[in-house]
Image (cartoon, rainbow, N blue to C red; front, side, top):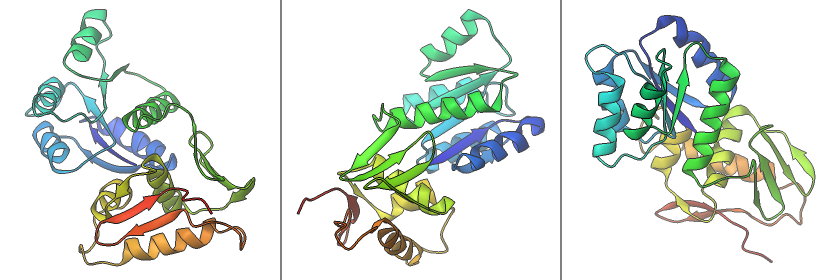
Length: 226
């Protein structure tokens, strides 16, 4: 899952980056409004965190432009303005949430978690595919009741595939939402990662395959039964 953070406060950049990375999110950031808009238009993000007061283009201008273009990425506005009128104005322009500065990092992460789940119509904190279960709150994965130890990148890949369960997920989508920019589209990094993840979730010889290859298209996570 990948977040774009558009905020010109250097005081906030480091702690927010640390908190979101610790929560397992991929992360891009900029302090400039125009660059932030370009980044939001150039890559598919799961959540955008958007300050209002920015150099060259305000957060509200970015918000209005993105929504006018049909971009439906969940947007969380950060602002020191805490009046009801300011909050309502941001929400009326298309923001999904509004957080007033100063804020607790744990609340910011919780709001980003909620918005990222909402994007994939995932209301529960647990996602299941067959006997495989992923808990979005505890960041744990179990199969047939047995916990599976995953590295941070493996977990991020698993989370994205499970949020998209039943859908074909392309290598480009995995690249954008899970990885930093790969060296090239011909890289086999994703193929190797998928192979490794398949092995990790096979907890017994009787474990059914859950990650399937759609040749020429990508991968799909689903339980196809016996």
